[in-house]
Amino acid sequence: MAEAFYGVIVVLLILSLYGIDARRREKRRRFILKENMPRELSQARLIHSEHYISTLLPRKMHGTLDQLYRVISGQHVLVDSKTRAKHRVYFKDIVQVSTYKVILSRNGMNIADYAYFRVVTPDGVEYIKQNLLSEHDVINEFDRTDALIKGKASPSNAKHKSMCISCPQQINCDDWQFSSRQISKETQ
Image 1 (spheres, rainbow, N blue to C red):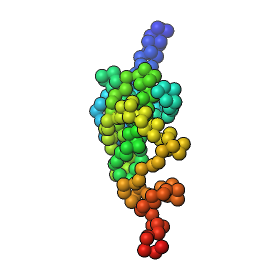
Image 2 (image 1 turned 120 degrees about the horizontal axis):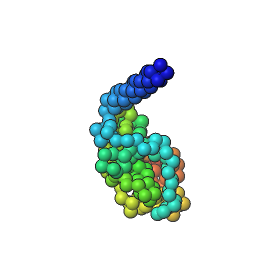
Image 3 (image 1 turned 120 degrees about the vertical axis):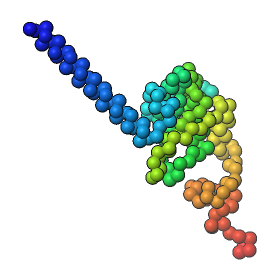
Image 4 (image 1 turned 180 degrees about the horizontal axis):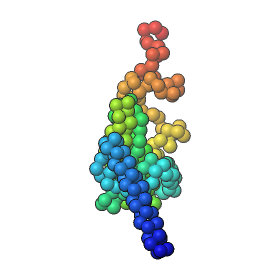
């Protein structure tokens, strides 16, 4: 009698766990559809989310990646989320995630040469696949930024007026070419 009772308990426990797993899988399926997640990522395994990473070589670098997936091929793919007015990825975003690639590669991980940017706008979510920079290019960007911060290099001029409008360094810029405060030669 006791064996039958325990048998029923085991069967109920298995059915309960199966139901929980089915609900979890259904929730994930709905999330993937809602997000319009690329197939490669929908079939991948999430390895890290909001994970701090660092390395001392080739330079002392650190950051917090958004998500890291292991895809079917065995490579790891970075995903970085951005909230924007438009579905757009900027060069600075590519530099940021490329830095994560260098850090993870230096820590022995097999990282893909591309990443997905999950761009959230009022119109919805879009995943944008972008190639990442090489380690050499990341080091060049890192060194250039360091030189600018230390005052050992001069920044390049803005190519578009919109780049100067919200720049906090306008007041320090010798070539404040697009400023509304710039004094024209006629008024001097």
